[in-house]
Image (cartoon, rainbow, N blue to C red; front, side):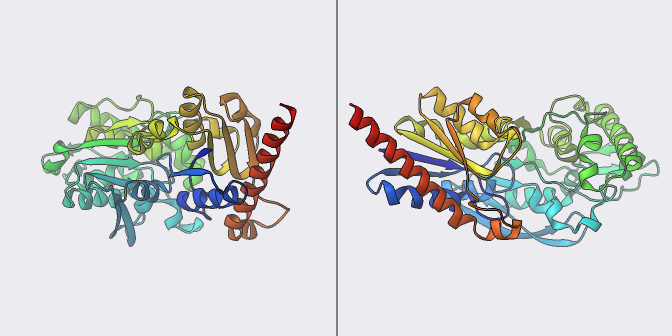
Length: 384
């Protein structure tokens, strides 16, 4: 029996690589002769760098960049094994996790560090860039990123704007004369599963601003500022991106990436699966196992297990899934082709305990599922 294990990370507890190894360990107790194909995966969010570096025998590059509040922070990006592709997680430079809850303020947080990561990737010779969106603390439309790459954002007096979303309300001119010319040599893909536009009731500020610390009043102010920004992008650059689905992703980074980088927005898992050559991997297996930290109704909307399942179903392969926890509407995963889904927490416990015991719990859960599968196979043989 050949088993493919293609999983995302369990956030805050296990990397995607650790998840696949824990499941393998559990299954090997029951099926010691099985052939396992391990494939750490991601959908463009946290863990994308680790997954692709692992899968391609690449390397992680640690660097220091400007953090969301303008402070220096330790960050990183990945380079695939062939040295051609850089993988950048926006959250590694402008993420919510870099801030205490009391520090969250999308009025002033900046994406400058994301632009600095891009510069580091260019310096390494990479000309294919994958920018994963998600977990951002910002609402500046990618303006800080653009400034780091040489774009000048000027007010009516010709002075450079300070960082943050609110400052865009004073934007009078965009000057791209000093934009790093290496950008024109690049293929830049943005991994995002968000289809929100830049502005309005379903836009970046209204939908994502509150979780970044924005009050209702600040949400309105940020949306108006992004409106000014969108107008300047259209007038000065000829880029009408505000209404394009995904332009509102990550506080408007989708819009900035399209306008300044010529980036193409694509579903995160679609990009990752191409690099991993996932369809070829699954062609010769008997069983596909997938999973992520929390499986619920949102899983079917482009998350890693949904993407894995779509490919597996195309090839006629059965799929089961493991989740660190199972949430509301988890039964929706059956409609997309996941035959069975299993939680890993064996008893009621506090979150900290569940996180610290995640690897052990996952291994035990995998072992029990494998034992049930083995029993079913034996019963079937006896009936025959």
